Image (cartoon, rainbow, N blue to C red; front, side, top):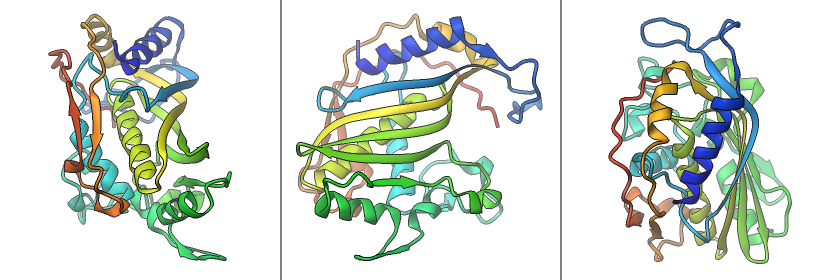
Length: 276
């Protein structure tokens, strides 16, 4: 069983057995038919993934990891907030007629700020510090910009990354305010695991831990039977992750720079409704 499977099973069982339902409250999310989308949740889940040991991808069901990487590159490389720059339709429901999702996600990472060393956006500042100031305890990004929230079509869920170099090894913390466990949990874990590998490789560092901190970890009401069936699937071992070793520039990575060897997920193809 992969570590990702193990943690996912633990998290979901804990939420289902010990979580708190919000059925007595008015909620913003709803299903496509207009029905309120209620959840059962746990507050404050922390998962640790040792990226030097294995790649944290679920085998209980397939994670479409290449599409997840596409979205990661859309946000962190292209720094885009327009779905026309994304090779998937996962953001279309939040886009306006021009394709924009407002001042969210990639837009925030691309805003430049002035520092004593020069002008950087958030991504380039991280890349600069990993190479020039690896002992710094200030290497982080944050896209939860209160000034621009009213112009975001969706507030950021995964909103902050903190990078830390210890003994030539890059570790990172992903902070997430809200997590749809079925639809998005492993999707985000895979994305930010790849990001840590990317940052480490171009900075001449070894890859260490990804720590995932989730404030509101929830399962939607219509996802409960799907989760329960999914937890009965036979898990497999984690695949091996490879990144093209010739890439030394963060902006030269593509989705084809990465591959998984031995990824054999369970044949679990239940359709997952998405709350909006």
